[in-house]
Image 1 (cartoon, helix red, strand yellow):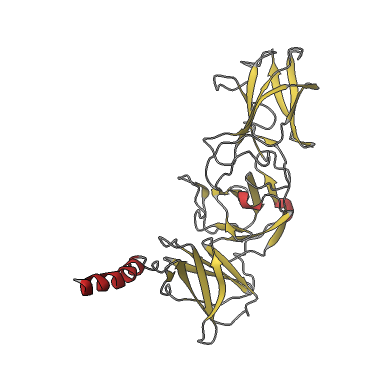
Image 2: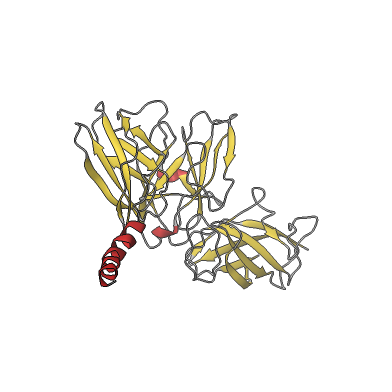
Length: 347
């Protein structure tokens, strides 16, 4: 009996260790070649806390990145025309997985499918003013942002996906949540709507790279701002406000002096709660905005995230009782930064 007990005590820790099996290899894995670079992306492995990336150009594989906590990695400094092989592994407290499938690519100079954008093409998605704010919605305008796309492709899930129609955007070391990828087949205009991940709050800039599924853009360093409010409008100037019953304020049903209205915005900056990128969340803005209606300051009743949407804020304000009738201008400012101007029909 004593021998059996001793044996059991010896085997118990071993059984517990075996129960903590290493994760499965990451799958699927893809590698997109670029100009002296390669974009490695992979699917999540259950139980993994990080990933390692390995590469070889001569048969000997070296670890080129470790403790990667996102699902993509951009390797730069490669030599065009040289064949490279890549694989990834998943890591947990139990150890490192077996390698994923090997993927071979050959980097090369820019081709006709090269995604191209500039700093000025990264804008607030509501005001289209150049700028990017962590947690908020931005629109990137450019060329060849996608390949073979016809029309608009939108996200169909929340949390938001990080790939739509083979298009992904790497912001810093994080795959950005995507709302939509669009190509106007009449004008040729292309855009990507995405959320700048919350993780970069407090930084002054961040590198941005676009993968259109065929090749990779140059990496552009984008300035980040603490706040840059933009009011969403249904047309170019007005119909950007809602009555308390969620109907649109317009000339047929104008606002009343003393009435509480709702405005929807993006770019309002940090909030009181920690929010996961790509997911809706609740929280009030750390700074109370200044709402100006026809030159008079309005009483702000609420300023924070709209809890059912990603990266969308709402501001509830009262139309000043002395507001004259007619079409009046409205702006919303945060920390001295003023939004685009919206028109408000007032009775």
